[in-house]
Amino acid sequence: MLNIVLFGPPGSGKGTQSERLTGKYNLVHLSTGDIFRSNIKEETELGKLAQSYMSKGQLVPDSLTIDLLRSEVLKYENPKGFIFDGFPRTNAQAKALDDFLSSQNTSITLMLALEVGEDELKMRLLKRSEVSGRVDDADPAIIENRIRVYNNETAPVKDYYSQQGKFIPIDGIGAIDDITSRLFSAIDAKN
Ligand code: ADP
Image (cartoon, rainbow, N blue to C red; front, side, top):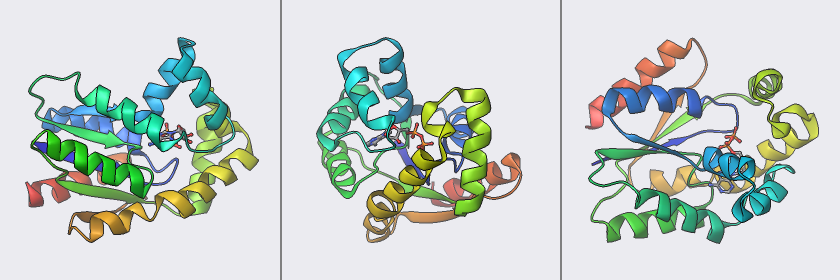
């Protein structure tokens, strides 16, 4: 299996690039953010709980997120692999993912980390709010909080995969197609 963690700060282009990677390598795209948002839309209990964190730019608690991710993975029979988008976001999630994948006789192949500076991120998120309707994109204070949470809790996950020799930084600035090419090259070199 080809299992990729597509990593990066909010607004770094994970969703956009995930779509291109799933197309080329025939992978299942799992975005925890998308799953939470569809639960919010359908007004499920999980959605109500997730919304209380997401609307403030905080992380949804690990236990909830890990359980959700496991049950999503198990929905697929004989997948070629997964793109994990927005997961893992903490070291505890990374460890839980490793344990779970190993129980399924597979593992993470590599982590591709999109690198984009903070000023560019803030601009992209505010621009996205005009079309996405995402409340967490519209308020500069919430954007600040998401970037702070990313720096404090999520960025350390890079070290986790780096220690396993799986971390590959990717320049996330430039034309969308060029960034896609960089991702393809990194995958093809390892695959
Ligand atoms: P972005 O990367 O632009 O922040 P996402 O859709 O990945 O967008 O995430 C939106 C929000 O969903 C996060 O700010 C967080 O509140 C919640 N979320 C998504 N994935 C996770 C996760 N793995 N752990 C905890 N919270 C998460």
